Image (cartoon, rainbow, N blue to C red; front, side):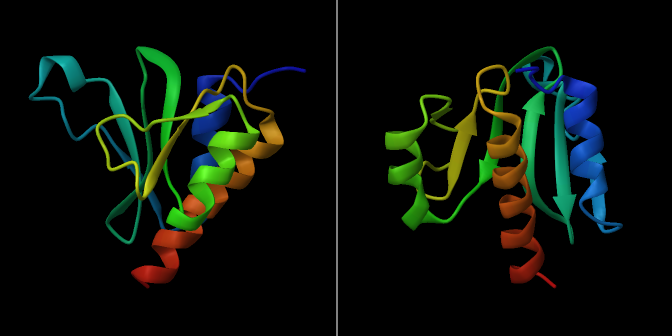
Length: 115
């Protein structure tokens, strides 16, 4: 199985809707200058470090998180976000179908909440 590379994943995020924006909002912080963040309606739904593409942090429904941890070894703690509403996913070990489904889910959570 081919894993999704950083550019393919970036393109997938941008393809979710015309309302998706991407930014590097933390350039003032040396340790976070390469963090690429995806927004819908001005709110974050996904982000990762371009220099270390081993973890993507995604918004997720709290009621789904425990089951995702249990069923998928590629799911773990998010980077620098609440574990109650966010998950981390390893793009190198996650099936592309799961990565895409959870990314679309994160986008839909935010789009629905802030439309």
